[in-house]
Image 1 (spheres, rainbow, N blue to C red):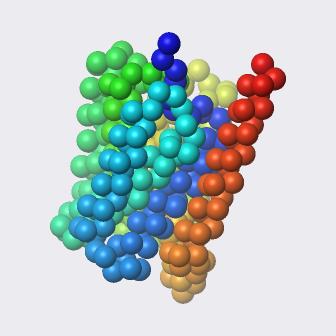
Image 2 (image 1 turned 180 degrees about the horizontal axis):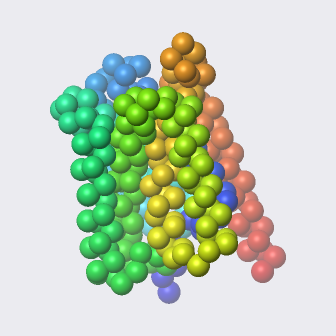
Length: 248
């Protein structure tokens, strides 16, 4: 019997999602800007890594935390450079780029819903559904970079203001999932999309110098901190799941 191949949605899932997407922002900037590889070449390199991890994930028969979060991370790093290439190198701009990517994401979710009659992420057991899942994640993470940059740079909110605004909206969504009858699948996808710009703005907050409203850790320092946190949570949740399985 096929088993669910994606992570269970718990509070730890969201913490790790934010760590992974924030790390994707800082690691993507590390390659494209700090190492001066450029947005185009960085996009090619990171998208190739995404394809490698995705193929490995699709070929696996069971859920593997390290593999799963590797795909999440590579969608985030690839999404960062792809968004920057589109918005900055091609000159599309943050607002237009966000609109284009929002449209792409909605198209994917609409086709998924039409094909499978559900957008639930608690029953990802076939290759077809899993492809929908990962394509939606790739677009949401790419969208998050563009939306995060738009809020931080063009809206006038700045890095801290953007992170605070998006964090507040995410908190309201979390509250709504407990105290309202709103569709949980809908709330999940809204939160999933918003955690990416939150990670993007939080990543900028960590990396940018103090005079620009950041905390001044730089792309290298921030990437090390976030990678360490993600590894710790992956190990903790894996051991916690194994312990619970043994008890059952």
